[in-house]
Image 1 (cartoon, rainbow, N blue to C red):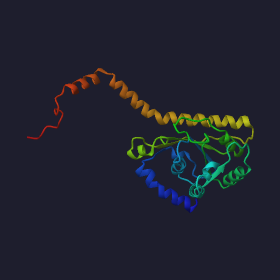
Image 2 (image 1 turned 180 degrees about the vertical axis):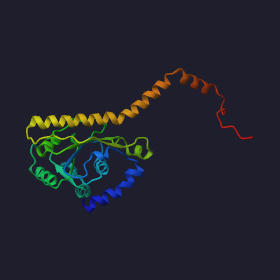
Image 3 (image 1 turned 60 degrees about the horizontal axis):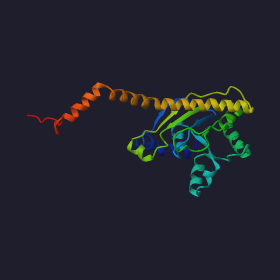
Image 4 (image 1 turned 30 degrees about the vertical axis):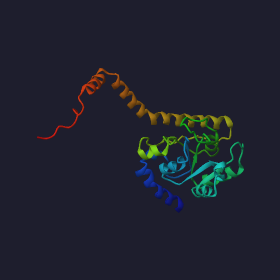
Amino acid sequence: MKSRWAWGWTATYPLFKWILRIKVHGRENVPTKGPVIIASNHASFFDPPLIGHAAKRECFFLAKEELFGQSKFFRWLIEYFNSIPIKRGKAFDIHLFKEVDRLIKLKQALVIFPEGTRSRTGEFLPFKEGVGLIALRYNIPVVPAYIKNTYKPWQEWLRRDSRVEVFLDEAMHPGERSKEKEKYEAFTRKVEEKIHRLRDIAWEGEKRFEKQCGEFYNTPHYDYVKTLKTRMPKGAAAKPKRA
């Protein structure tokens, strides 16, 4: 692990752990060594450092080329923390594959956002087949990931109205090397299904809570309590003073 990555991870740990209270589920599913792809949904600029925080190992991020032209400082920042430009719309990027080949030989972790860009609403965008193409080309495992709530305003994170959570599933193994389009497209669909399932798991708890609240609000008991509150004189619910 490069010293700059270790420094960055250590510097952001208090922010993610104690200030924003980021919750990570399934960190043990990310192999601590060996080449691996982490494939995640994408809704915020915070997603790459969040995946790096959750994985707890050095990661290299495949990022759209346009990000590198935003400003000199931003380009330096994302390059410093292992971002690699992707030329979107190009069928075969020789520079990208040379870099990916080098990183896989070094047994590094690649982070890919298969949607290709951020979703501003949190809803999934169609997945690109790049994750399947690389996984089958080199026969390396893919860890599906889902990041919850980063599409919401960061002020909600600070107020803790919305908690950001990262869910990491068990690694998916291609089981073979292949450059056939049908095979890597099919594997991409499997990864997409896994990430969709992680989304369902992430929101299942809140839906269950809302359902339970809804069931309570529709009971005679709730109506009775609400009636008592409306009939109660002002100040009657105050705590009685000790004699």
